[in-house]
Image 1: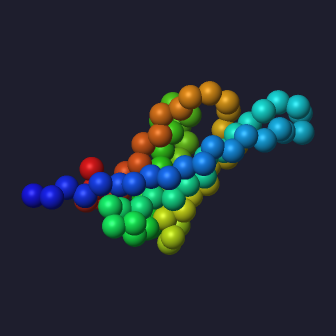
Image 2: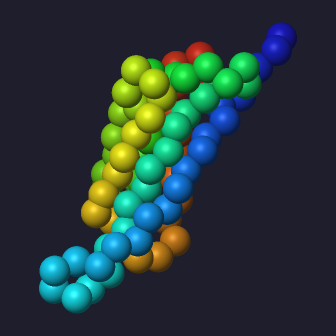
Length: 80
């Protein structure tokens, strides 16, 4: 049985806030193995207890995020 894969493209964006601190954001697109978007895919940052759902084009945006390394989990029914 063939198991589909999720291809996940992200761009980490860092910008300065008005208070002079730094915050970032996570922007990306969730695609299947045929480069088709996965609308409604869930993108979760468990350590920050936050997340987003991909739009009809598979695109998402999470911000503001604190600086540092964060685990990113992508979930979509029927995919591993």
